[in-house]
Image 1: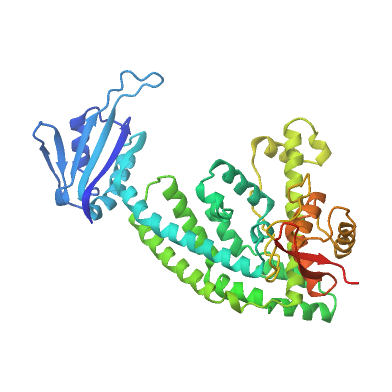
Image 2: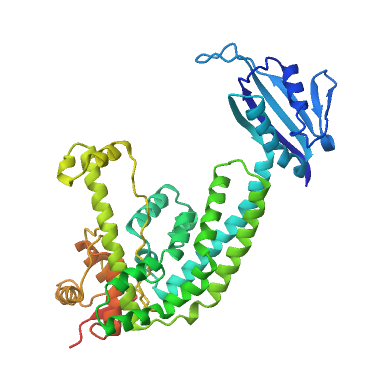
Length: 464
């Protein structure tokens, strides 16, 4: 690859180099830097000395005035500039040069001022990373719409993820946001991967299976566990993602993506790795998309997934409560002794160590192919999704009460879950999944109705 590539460093406070000429010679003497060759020291038309390396590479050193530095005493500093027409020549030279400057010439500080090689690598990697990211977004939209419903984002994402996206939507609104649902477009790269490999069915992780085995007391319990492990949902994610090391590959790609985003230093091995990851992840996601329509979930699978999501939601609630309590301790509104904290925990609280930054997803809440209404009667003072887990009996009782409200003659499914029940603190995701199970069991009836504004609405009622 040819062009005009520059690698420029600020080199501060060497061991015993005091001027430009000494630095030039110290660079030219190292055969490790020059792959065993002896470069030529020459001058440009202005009389400035430089080193002429392989394939026309040019290394120039410039003195930096350190006499006006306010807070430090620096004996010597230089700008070292390496220029080459060939990517393949300069890319490996950078590491050999840096090792020589640090280990042999003992520079106290080295800072990169310009790195065209890393920029070239990042420019080659970004389109591939962006393509994979958008491919997974496409897959997630299609999969969760077909297996959850139109409201799949509110159902599938955690409260923390939803709030993060809402903040970004407020701060980065654009013209497209007025026409499309833009939730997943604002989700982090890491969160997209988590929506795949952290599905909380309770069966995709070996440690979860061992926990379930410990709780088995009867032969019926064992048969139920075996049935769940063989379920279509579990087999699908195991076959198309887990068995193909999707989590490991996505996390490796995430590390490279973060370096691209922060303009970090890159090496050729990372370019090669990024291309390999892009190709492999593309194959995995494309193949999984081909088989979306094959998943048919049984009632038992839906119940098992609902149960597992309830457990994860409870864990998330505990983490949120713990973080709130610790915040109250930090603000002085609560004593550490009230939380039963040890001396070490109090120290960690003060220093910020030992924090748990894990994200726990609530997983998919299966809704089949229920179409939700576009517009329903409003309900004032709607609260954001909470952590309360609703039971079957509570849903039945709440639906009975909703039917008796004097301002509606029907109960819209979406309004009932996302406003009426959410306003009482019930978690939207687990409520949706349980309502869908009760519909399948015919304990709740789903029917079509036309709203006062003329919109088709999916409504729910109790059987007579």
